[in-house]
Amino acid sequence: MTRRAKREKIALSEDDKEYLQAMTKSGTASPRKVERIRIILSPLKGKTDNGIAHEIGIHRFTVKNCLDKCSSMGMETPIRDLPRPGAPIKISDEDKKFIASLACKKPLEK
Image 1 (cartoon, rainbow, N blue to C red):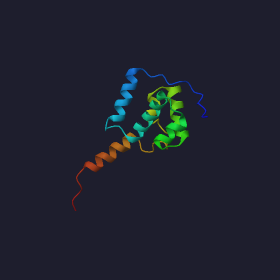
Image 2 (image 1 turned 120 degrees about the horizontal axis):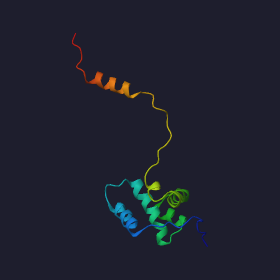
Image 3 (image 1 turned 45 degrees about the vertical axis):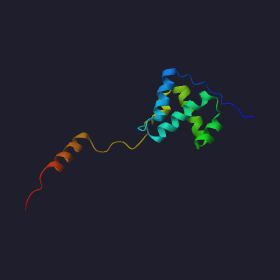
Image 4 (image 1 turned 90 degrees about the vertical axis):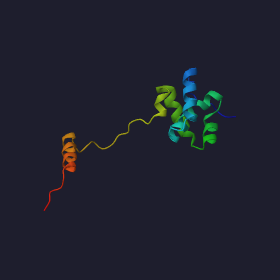
């Protein structure tokens, strides 16, 4: 017997479901986005986290994280990539403008 996840049930309106299903069929969405949409739509069909992971071919923790984000932060959060921390910007906007102007100048003739 499989155990069900203890998260809130994902509530999607009919418009949201249609939008997500259309995104999975469009050729413009990235494969990562389509995979996440399939994860969100699968529990609505009564599938468990393990069943979804097996069907899609991913780890069950990926399914769990995606569905947890969806239930706590809304439908759009797991679909798009959240900003990640990184190194602070080292080149100022003024420096970028100077480099661009320098690159656009004609070279000096000798």
